[in-house]
Length: 400
Image 1: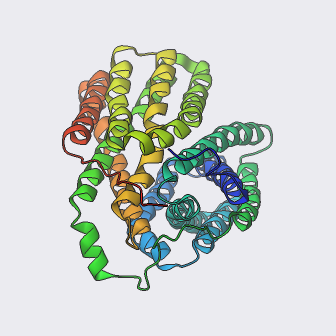
Image 2 (image 1 turned 90 degrees about the horizontal axis):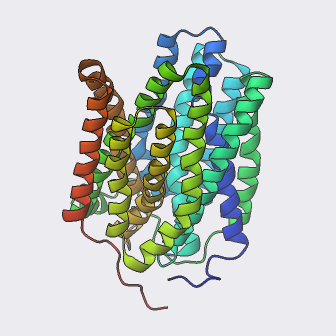
């Protein structure tokens, strides 16, 4: 277990702030985009096209963005580029909410996010090293979760009091302290091989994609999001129809409660993963999915939904810490950590994309309970795969 002072120092405190402010800024690109465009007389078809364009850009950018970050020696520069891209996208939305600038903003935000996520994970690895990476990732998730929760509350309040445009101005402003935080992170003191001299290292790529552990975990990640992604939208639609004006309070609680669970649980997940290994914690996170689905199926209503969302906080805490941690395990001693993150990100997006379509179709055809049942069975399948097929990836620590 890492010593208490291992993750102290200016660089780690700056990385805490970076995660906090990046999460703040990213919150602006959630549901606020649809609300904002609606106020500017966009049709639902036009809004759907803009959001879909952003999603598809993220899907096709996962692998190229990971390879690009691998090829960049200065990971802080990669992260700064991602933050700057988010800032420009937010300003485009705030200043010029017409078709072409909005579409450019969606594409730019998606690609910048695909750069930023692996870059922050790479910076974490450089700062903490492999032995303390779990605890460092737990801290990342904690500060990101706090940032998400606070930003959602502040942006929602400001957007309601002033206008939706303020949300994107605030998003751009929050990118400034994120960039300042990057200056304090430093270059990291752990000598890990994280840079490849070529953008396409075919030998390394063949070795990476022939790793059975990566292929199994990618399937587990896809099943996780196939089960998880549609649960809240499906339950939220039902609550909105049954609860009327009170639905907004319930949906807000559904966002805040899991964020609180993630903030509380993530550091423990990171520390425990270094002590007992990865697989048992993976099973905890994946097993929470079928439990959540069953709760939603048999206990319809507003407050049972909040309880189910608390369970989802367990899954989110485990997933948020374990995905980059396993990527580091699988690429230890290679220069393809960020490309591996891209592979797993691609699996995540594909699972989520299928989830909402599948659940909506089942709900229309056989009812809401049947949809939650299928999502639960999908989560159970992922749990079985983690428990019986996925090997342990933690390796013994190298001597100091």
